[in-house]
Image 1 (cartoon, rainbow, N blue to C red):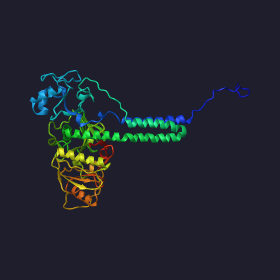
Image 2 (spheres, one colour):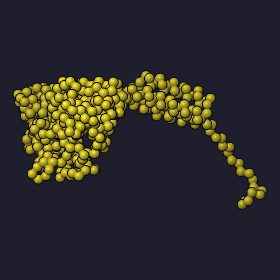
Image 3 (cartoon, rainbow, N blue to C red):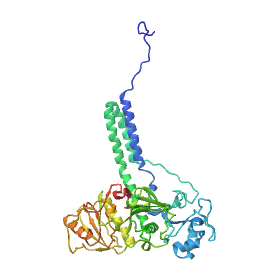
Image 4 (cartoon, one colour):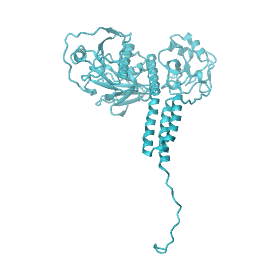
Length: 481
């Protein structure tokens, strides 16, 4: 019937709504499981963080098409990286019988070397082509491909298969069991809102439980980066070679390179907004320009040492690694005064400590003086390669100059003659001393402050994870520890 008169009442199954408490329990357990996965993710295999003990020096055999048709042999490699072709037998002993990715292996000194083979080298090897790689010989493999070699990451020269054992930390397992029991009891006596709030708190507690493990793993990775920088001279040579492409010529004036990043595949430079680069350089975005590592410009120097390839005033230092793990260089001669690093105090100290170590490697004997700023600033160790002086007494102490901001184009080139390090935020007297040594019209030194300095030309910001924000480059790097 079309109306309700005389209409039989419909018989519908009775719908019983689900109680609110089990639904609250479901939400709570979902949040708990997500928090547990976060805590569990911090307990991955210890081998995830690289260590200095499993890093070895290797040489990747290149295709003759990339080396002008010249075939690589053990004597030629020994001559290039060890300075003595007679030491080819040492390389043979290190690699004899090791299965390469194409199934081949070295059996004698006269064997043909195939492109893509990864040869282990003695620890004193150095020079072009020498790279660091992880030794996986104890895990069923040989030597993993070095970063930037073009080989798949983790692809060893052996034919074995490695496995990963998933382990659950005792603290996380106990926390999970106790949390589940607490959820069952609580869900029966409290309402949905209180259950949700309680388990949100439990999720935050589990997150805090995994925080120390994350920090330890992050610190181990930063320490491995520091050891890599100590042993890596190839990226420094490549950086200075790329910098030489923008030096002044009879056809064009010098173009300021404020930072650059290099690896075996690509070179990236940060130029001033008004500058451009010719082919094979291509614009990435704004002031960043890129080119393939194997396609240098027509005026690029090659086969020269860093000191010879660099313009005399340039002072390239590795500030850290970018998101892809590539070293990022900044030119301290473009600093034009003072760098101030604020934020997490220990990480800010690590930034300055690393810059001093970089200068000690490339410019040994550079004078440095340390001014004590804030009493709670972490202590700093001056590398032995630098010439530490007592606190400098400038001939005329002037008031600090007004801040000039972080505009790249406003900085002029100033050779690094000496370094003034301030541990913590400088007080009034130290600020005046810093201005007299590093400011406009001063002694021409370069200031590094791990603390606040309003008169600094560069300002960097460090966080507790070891990352540093460089606003002038719109870039974040992870610094060594």
